[in-house]
Amino acid sequence: MTPPAAPTHPSTPAIRTALSVNVNKVALVRNTRHLGIPSVARAALQCLAAGAQGITVHPRPDGRHIRSSDVYELAELLQSWPEAEFNIEGNPTQNLMDFIRQVRPQQATFVPDSEDQFTSDHGWSFPQDAERLAPLVAECKALGVRVSLFMDPVPEQMAAAKAVGADRVELYTEPYAAAWGSPLQAVELKRYAAAAQAALDAGLGVNAGHDLNRDNLAAFVREVPGVLEVSIGHALIADALELGYTATVQAYLDCITQGFAVAGDS
Image (cartoon, rainbow, N blue to C red; front, top):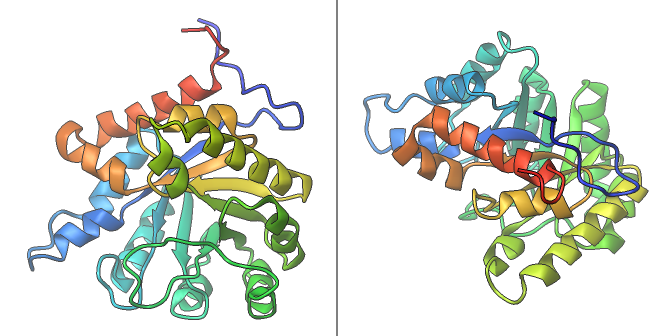
């Protein structure tokens, strides 16, 4: 069988999109009781064994899902998976930098959430956020940690993200997911493709995440150039309740494969 080819974006290197599983929702369920189940570490282990290329957590200051102990336990677990990446998300003006300094994950994703925010729903804005972000980005990079900035799909903002020292941007994909199956779907895909191309032109890597799922993932990685990583949590964990971690991770990897397949190839 011929291996799937990369999407045909002329200025994009043929690099397959990695899947990083966000395990926040596993912790959320665990925290409803005092029994320690389900295990966040066991969930991460099963996802990695099924082929996920990374694990993502967002330890919020209120500890509503991921706790400090989870971050350290996962960091230790990932020592046995040298090919996998640990991605820690959060607001660097709150508690994120303490974890970065102690754990030194492969990637820190800066997200502009307030402490009581229900979920991430917008990206950084420039030039407003540049002054406070630049020294924090520089500190992460001095520690050997790659920095990704959570961004709305606005092409004009990408050069500014590069200017503060970021290595990548994570495109906030909820508007795309909300438009899926509607007349706006194609419009949103073009908007994200333009933002990703602007990021590539600025010298940034491109990540994506928020409400990506088994329905909309293949089209996204097919049409949006240069997506290096997708971070998926809510939908993937919901699917895992029905399918199990192994089958679910493999299903998401299949979606990525479909997105990278030559048109008409099966």
